[in-house]
Each structure stands twice: as structure tokens, then as C-alpha cells.
Length: 279
Image 1 (cartoon, rainbow, N blue to C red):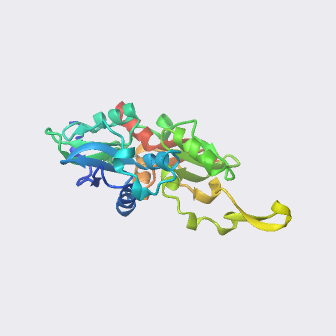
Image 2 (cartoon, helix red, strand yellow):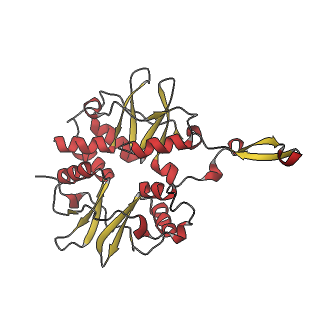
Image 3 (cartoon, one colour):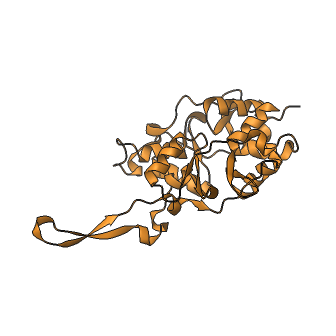
């Protein structure tokens, strides 16, 4: 019997109004450790805001000068969202997420009322629990991951993140993965946590005919914001074991390495969803 969405969806859902501001939305994401907020009216989903929407808002020329308290959810939320009924299969959920390049689906009743949400994380947990021995990591891994060196600038990292299907970048050194950068590392970056020695440098200016010392603030680099020492997977490893590693460690990506720890590819929750559609 097909595994139903209702077996793996999360409920109740963290939701907000179209008229709530982004400071409130951001606080909800941080407080509840979620990557998306469903926007509802009369308990029916009308939009969704993800961490990626925050990145677009923060780097938008039209909005970056406004504080988050002055930007309403309805200004940046994705409208005409894709939903799924609770009695559908997780295979149908995986197909919808892949077709529309989204990481979560609001789950509705037959009457269209919001009853839950199912995400790539939920699909990954389902795979870990139900599909042991079906596929190996090498069967599904992505062989062309987005990579940067530890000294690449924040701007370059943001550009790669915006183009990467999973919103993940691997930091490599000597061909080996040494860190991971995710969209959330940019959306909720804590500048106070950055190393003090990269905040600014001193230079002497001779403007207006006199020497003065000025501070030139430095752009954070990949090494400043990456999560170091990532967990990895081997190509012949059971994909269900890799999925279980993701769930138990609350991570969304595993670099795949050879016997010398050289990067061969990556497995993300998107690859797990693709695997579900094959079974």
C-alpha cells in the first residue's frame, strides 16, 4: 500500500498572516527551527515564505534599505502555491516538489483547509525508515556540485546559492570538502559571530590635503560563514543510511567522497526525493 502524506506531514503548521512583517516571520523561523512559513487567510493557504525569499528580499535593490518591520509578508510571499491533499502518496508529493522545484507542500483537506505541511525533510525520513537496501548513494548522487574555495567572497557565494538546485555550496580545499554553506547561513547571518580580524582594515587617506586614518570594512569570505568539518558519505553506502544520517544530524547535504576523501559529488534531500519517485 502506498505511503500516505498524512503519515509523514507535520501538524500543526507554523503559519502567519499576509499582513505580518518580515521581522515577525524571521522570528518564527528562528524560534521554531523551520525553513518556511505558510501564509493563511481563513485557515486556507494563500502563500508561502522560505529562507530563499529572505535572501531575495535582503538583496533586492527595491527593499534592502527598508527595515524588516516595514516589509509585509504579502510583498515577498510566493502566491499560487502548490498544495497536496492529505490522502495522497509521498511519491506524489515527491513528484510535485521536483516538478515545481520547491522544498515543501502545504497539506490540505478535501475542503482546502490547511491541516499540515510535508517537506523534503519528511520525505528523507520516510526513505530512511521504509526503503533500506533499495539504492546506493552512487545511484542518485549529483556529480556536479556547486563548489567554492575558502577565500571566495560572500557575493560569489550568494550568486552560486541562488543558482544551485538545493541552495547548497561545498567549500573545498585540495579537492576535499572542508565546509558547507547553505541559504540559511546567508539569510540569517550573524555578523557579530564573524571573526573580528576580518571586520575591517586601516588605511591612511590624504583627502583634503591631510593624512587621516580610515577603516575599510572587509567582505566576509566563504571560510567565515561555512559550517566546517561536514559529514560525508561513500558512493557504495546504502542511500537509506545516508538519509538516516541527514535526519539524525539535522543536515540537508552529504558530500560524497572516495577513499582518499576527494569530493565525488553530493547527496541532498532533492536526490532522496528523486529516489522515492523511482520506487
